[in-house]
Amino acid sequence: MAESTAAKKAAPRRMDRRKARTRSALVHAAQRVLAEGRTEVPIQEITELADIGVGSFYNHFDSKDELFRVAVEEALEWWGTLMDRLTADLDDPAVAYAQSFRMTGRLHRRHPELSRLLLRQGLELVRYDRGLAPRALHDIRAAVDAGRFEVEDVDLALAVTAGAVLSLGALLHEQPERDAAASADLVARGLLRQFGIPPEEAERICSLELPDLDRAEPLERA
Image (cartoon, rainbow, N blue to C red; front, side, top):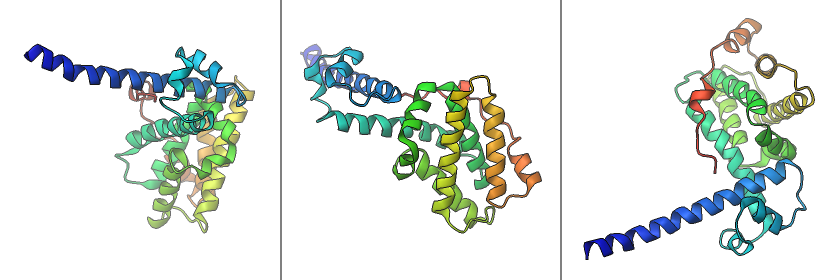
């Protein structure tokens, strides 16, 4: 009797895990085709890439557009959550902003598929309420409130930051021999100076050691 009860309890858990794996496979497949710019791909091709049946698709998403939206949001949130974790103990918002930018610059080399997915979104990234944009906006506002940044328009500062992230990523893909870390640090220094940080202080901030991404990064990709 006890074994039967335990089996009944375990069955829903196994089903939930299967559903989660299927959903994750669909999201990963959608991220891959989006990174390749293949937005017109049929649903059947996405399900084949995810190695699931077409019928299972509609157990999770109502349409391809919904899947694509979720795929972008979850990619952004995955990286944003990692940045939260790696900057959580920083008291200086200017340092938090710079470190997030420097690590995001390195993202383009570490995760080229994710990078291409972000680049495909262009400045639409600024409009997402999950992921990198709201976190960058928070850091900019916090740095202004703390007297670290001299910024008259935080929304404009966010747009400049997003443009820098996208332009850097495009350049790194065009020039695979370019040093991603040095380039990201150079752009971060320029942004800090543009936001009112003195040159020597910007240099110091961008010379600070970053967290070890190899050890910190294993976050579950949804």
